[in-house]
Image (cartoon, rainbow, N blue to C red; front, side, top):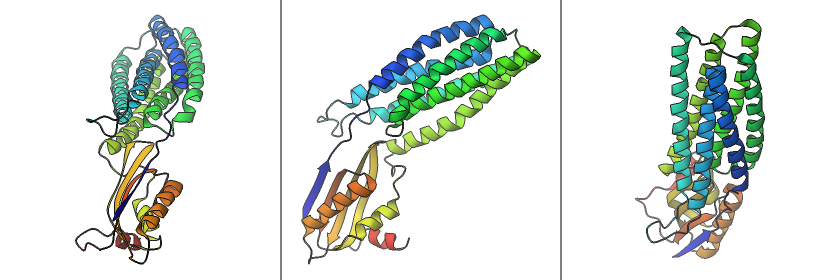
Length: 303
């Protein structure tokens, strides 16, 4: 009986793009809040509120990266990587709160539309769009590797669409004088944000519940393991994510006595790293099939 371990950890997300995006977004947030108050635009205020969540999300993302770098200790043997997922879940809940508030405020304003200075609204929204596009560019590289960064990116992306909506609303108000369009734009922004926030929250909760990471097909993975020469049975198979980019796997593998167990396990580790990008594995090989255990090789053959 033997064990095979691989403890390679991907490099952490770089902080510099987050810092630049935070500076840009933070400075413009204050300008947009002032502009929203002066012009009387709810759509502009809603965009400023989303920028506030952006600033908070970026700060939390930076904190999560720093805390996540702390080494493992006797109390937390996996370290603090999971803090990034908690940050992503928190940012998502903030998006929910802001979206619901904007929907409520828009409902109140429908009955009594305020006077809106569309020209100032248009100028500020255009500047906001430019800031959002720059921030999105800075965060693009890390969004597919970390739910933490993905949450911040989603908030900036929703702001970008919000800025486009405010620009469109300002043009319509300037041409037609229909001030109620401002509230309609705010409602559309809120309705756009809610489902995307829900998707990100589901991904975060799945990791917190140690579910199979998104993008990992368990039947395909078990079939790939069982296809390795000498493998008779695989059981106690568990796949979960510490974060969105740190996937772990443990399994018991029954190896035919005619094969070198350590060599078979090494082949499995190499295959998992190459085909599934799973580099943190604990594989234990055995010689006897436990009849009362789940046989993932049998399950894989049914697919």
